[in-house]
Image (cartoon, rainbow, N blue to C red; front, side):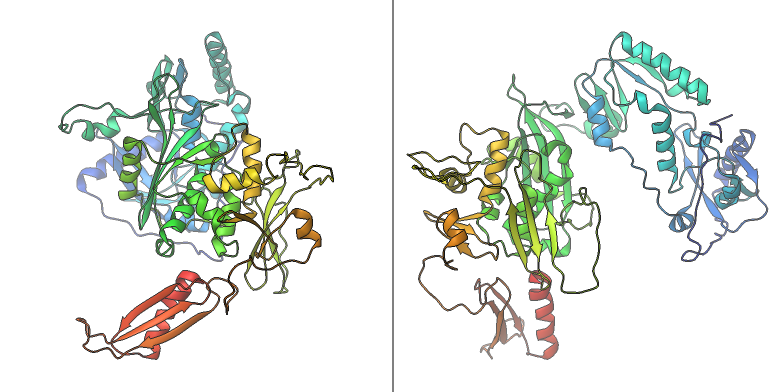
Length: 597
């Protein structure tokens, strides 16, 4: 098979030999029934020009035979040792969910599959011996790009984008479909790319794509993949397999979120305008790490919400999200002190999304989210609460340890809506601020700023106060007004009927904007005065031992080790049989440092 011209593309294999020296795997034993099938497949690849005999080599890998449905064997190579030494190719790979979403809801499809697509790309001559593998009948290496290499996916995606970039991401129907098929085949003929005719389908109403069935109805589950479930005897009625649909622009999305002690589950859906029925768009589940599992329940809910919004940002950035959950994390984020380590980050990360909290009503949608939380995907990757770095142009690290760090939430735009930022001091304290140009006008009536206008009946802060009390937007507010109101509310704190503004150092200030700028600042709200030994949550703890206690507990413990945070009055306690230095150190490490820093 000719394959692509080497002048267009070659597959290279750079290696990090200093940190990963070459490895030669020993020949593995195979079942007798597989040996002849392996030999048949190797001979077939030699005759096709994919393999050649290799005499001098440094890397040697083993064969991993995979039996096909028709009884033949697919010869795979165990390149795990080799891939450790091969640097990753950062050419972007497409997201499967976005590809499937963009393909669905059309009435005409043509599916084409390359014939041994990877094997149509030639390897660089000097890198052939790096793909050496061992068999019972000899040692061979690939003349073409094989499956299993770390860089193979990126190389194949790069050449496909290079050759067909002007034909991608287009919606083609009717006669245009035939015109573009002709263009495609002319392009394939020009570059000598071969298709597998047994896997090509033209002018179909639906078809299989990346494990799903796409059609005019939307995205459906592949019947073969749920065959065992569908053939189970149903409890009462036979249900149709769920259909995933892309979202309809202009209508809000519904997010069902369930958080358990060690996992989370969610379902993103949308209500049909005509039938009022809810259709699923996306399912997600995840296990918390050990540290995340120790968060209080409401903070765990906030952490889960941030992860879901970032994970589904291709939807959440462009739609209003109606959140249905057990508790309202938005109210907690607005009412919590900004100095808490993660609260400031979560608050500013969520300001770019249009989220409305709605009490739970649908039992079916919530049941799906509960089920996903009960059986999460085995993913131990910690949730990254840092700000995304898409807009960072340059990062310079100073050797001096007394530098401050600044993170932006990426919300700056030409309309002047402003940006949110978090400053981190050298001692690790977090200071949320906002940069927004204000235009203050002195008039006979009340003052107003450029985003909230005051009237004779209501003060300028009435919408902020109402939003923090009820979580509801004004009836006249559009999407931009809602976003601005969420940003402004992040800088205020509501105590009963009194609205306070958060200052730069996270203390609470009262009065109007001019008073906050020019007048003497009152560092605390008017309240009953009490001595406060610690200025920040979890910055100062008191520890004491209670005991001995008689009679002893059933487990023989007779002492109670207690720690209390002077700011929040939060208590951590354990029982001990005896108070030793190791026991106290273990308590501080597990119950204080691991949880609160």
